[in-house]
Image (cartoon, rainbow, N blue to C red):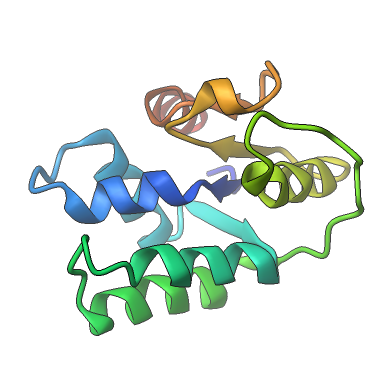
Length: 140
């Protein structure tokens, strides 16, 4: 089985944690992180965003759930120190995600999985959750 690297956008994690449907696409992607099918790639900045967003009161996620998710990303994933690209994105908060996928792609197959596809340049490796599941299923 092929190892697949992915930067998971924060909105995908939030959506998965909010979902009550085990078969929801976002839940499937997060489950694939936990079972090792997907190797998360991240930077210090991305971890900080995960932590900040997941702790927002409006979501009501438990401290245990947040810790478990972030620890899984850290333990199963790969810390990337991305090069500055100078890219200009519609939402500059998305830049760390984009730079990490670019850095990793120089050596491996890596994807950026997001619920906000229009926030990023149109690239084959920037995919929706559904597209990412199709890629994973094709590679297995």
